[in-house]
Image 1 (cartoon, rainbow, N blue to C red):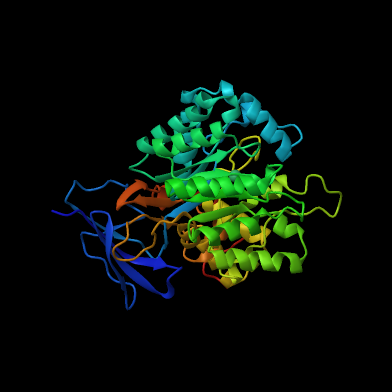
Image 2: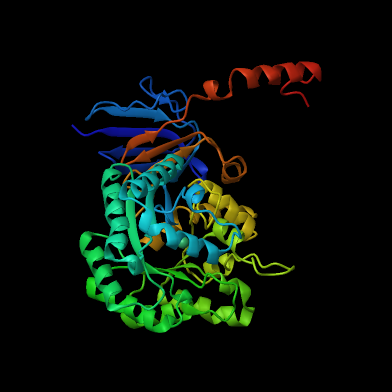
Length: 454
Ligand SMILES: [Zn+2]
């Protein structure tokens, strides 16, 4: 007997806003997505999602839900996190708030982090992200080979254990960040060992290297040898002359690594003139390099050394998208010395992206939602969507439209992984009831206001 999930009256705002849909899944895989002629009358066995307590039927049973026209999106994909660093701010600190001090302070304390401590931070950050609706997470990992192999591999071991423990709830990709100073043979051997242990691909921040090009060359050689993807922090700088992105794109073309290379941050693109940025953007598009914008961390970190006017540091999101580059919006650091805020909620990051990139038109708002769903799927190389044959990883949110999603950032969400509900929202009556309802009634009484009156 197959486990069946059927949801009627689902709104799919990224697919077609003129209709509601009936979604069917079996054993965690979508089997049908049917456009309804109008709102359908649910069968007696169907529960409203709002009143449902989240209980799943036994294996082989059927769950029938009425989504009540709530927005249903593919589960979010956080394409760039630092799970190992998340929530380390109380321990590490950063007085100046600069990227330089963050790197320095974190690096100094890395040898003292125990594996258990690293695992605890990663678990907390990942579970929080999952609770907000992300079921695919790509995390970069500190890889401090200069403190010795044992220190570098301690983080890797912790991450592999967390990935395994959370496998029922999320797909987690791991990218150790190769050192940006003097990429030694020992560092490369240790990276090869991490790949053998099971990390997903190779990361790094070559723009920080005194010799970025040879470092990038070696990352590509190693990636080819191990047949793995590359995800680099690229040009996280206000200096318009830092342009490793162009070299990364050329190497991608040379190696035929299209679709397997990601460039995150791309801040210097925002600091340079249009005529300098244009050819780099074209090259990224031609090479099939995916881009990730990290607006929270970059609005916070960039422009630190400017006097007014202060640069904002967020890459050219609209121009990259217009050139055909898939651009993901992602969390980056969470409550650590690099970025004191954030909570792993990609809907919030979608809103920050919309602010930072001036995306407020109806089309822009939908694009911002694609930047946390469809585009990161392309960037991290997973298949995702509400389509027959794909995994039923999705999130239902207490909002009717994309505008409401970014305006209200609804806390009430139902998060699903492979057809199983990981988080269900409390019924609306419980959520809104009690005090708020009586205040509302009282206030209406005082101003002689009645709902429905014009
Ligand atoms: Zn990062």
